[in-house]
Image (cartoon, rainbow, N blue to C red; front, side):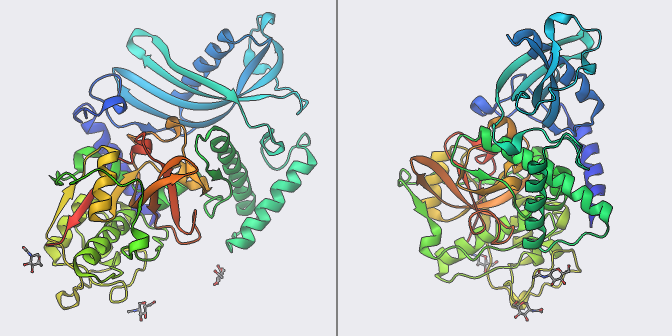
Length: 478
Ligand SMILES: *[C@@H]1O[C@H](CO)[C@@H](O)[C@H](O)[C@H]1NC(C)=O
Ligand SMILES: *[C@@H]1O[C@H](CO)[C@@H](O)[C@H](O)[C@H]1NC(C)=O
Ligand SMILES: *[C@@H]1O[C@H](CO)[C@@H](O)[C@H](O)[C@H]1NC(C)=O
C-alpha cells in the first residue's frame, strides 16, 4: 500500500511539473497568489537543499533587522513550502534561538556560534517568512516577516536530539518519556525494535514541539498536543491519511453550480441534531477520505429525501470507482460520477470497509441509495452556511496540516500553517455556529471517534481558512 502511494506521488510529481504554468489562475480575492498564474505550492522537507539557502537568507535578514545584541541562528525549520511564480515564492516557519556571539563581533562564520548554553537564557522566537526568490536576477525579497516569542513553558525549551544529550534538563526528559509511555499504552503501539522505538520517540518529541508551536500561534480556542498520530512524521501522516489529488485543480471535473440558497444562513445549524449524520467512521491507513466525505454527504441527502438515515459503503468506492485512486486519493467530483455510473451505493453492512483495495464486489441488487447528479457550491462561506442549513451536510476539502495535532476547541491556525492552495483532505461539513464568540465550522472527520472532539474537528469560520471554502459539493437525489 505504501508503495502504491509512493508510486502515485511520483506520477503526481511528474504531472505537477508538466502542468505548472498552465493551471489557470483562480480569481478568488485575497487568497489569489501575488504573481498571476501560479502552480500549486509544494511542501518542502527540512533537508531540501534549495531551502537551506532561503533559510540562511531569512536568518541574515532577521539579524540585520533586529535590535538584539546577540546573533540568532535558526534552531528548527517548522514547515516550508514553495510555489512557482515569477521565480519562486517560499513560505517558511522557523525557530530562531539566541547564540553567545555578539553581532558586533563581525564573525567570519556565524554558523560556528553556539546557542546559549543556559536554558533560562535561551530565548526562542518563532518566525513566519515569505521570500520571493528570482534566481536569474540573483534577487531575493522578503515579502513578509512576522515573529513572536515561542511559548515559554518548560516543555518548549530546547531539548536537543535524543538520545538525550547531557545538557537536556532531566525533568524535561522524564516528562517526555512519561508522555511517550502514556501514548504507547493508550494507543496500543508496539515497535519492532529498540531502534524503531527510539526513532518514534524522537518523532514524538518533534511533534510535541510542532503542536506547541501551533498552540502558541493559534488564534482560536484550540488545544493541540498528543494525538493518535503523534509518532508519525509529517510525510508518513501525509502518505497514510491524506490525499494529494485534492490540490490538483486541473484534475477536477467541473460540476454544475448549485442553486443559490433561498435565504440567509440562520445564526447556527447542526445536522447532527436533525438525524442526518451517521456515526463517525475510520478510514484507517488508506487515503480514502474522499470516499468518506462523499458517502457522508449522500447519507444526508438520502435522509432528507427519504427520511431514513443509512450508513453507506466507502469500500464500494475504494474497489469500484475507476475514476479515483482507491487508497491513493480521489476527488468527490469523480466519485459522484462513478456512483451514478454504478447505479448507487450499498450499505456499510452489505459492503464492509477493509481499508485496502479489493476486487469490485458491487451488486445492483443491493443498492440502498442512488444519486441523480451533483453540484458545486459557492466559495462564499456565508452562502455555504445558508446552503448547508437548507440542503444538508456538504462535502468539502481543506489543508489538514493542523489536524494531525488537534485535540479540541476551535482551531484557528495561522494561514502559513494552512495554505489554502495545499488542500489534502476531504471531510464533511455538518454544521456551524459560535463558541464563546468564535465562529466555527463543525467538521465530521473519518479518523475514528478517538480523534479530536468525538471524531469531529472544529475550524474557525469566516476567513476561508485552510481552503475550506474551495471545494464544497453535494450529490443530488431526485
Ligand atoms: C493491541 O495490539 C495488539 C498487537 O498489535 C493486538 O493484537 C490487539 O488486539 C490490540 N488491542 C487493542 C485493544 O487494540
Ligand atoms: C460487516 O460488518 C457487519 C457489522 O460489523 C457484520 O454484521 C457483517 O457480518 C459484516 N459482513 C461481512 C461480509 O463481513
Ligand atoms: C434518479 O436516479 C434513479 C436511479 O438511477 C432513477 O431510478 C430515477 O428515475 C432518477 N430520477 C430522476 C428524476 O431522474
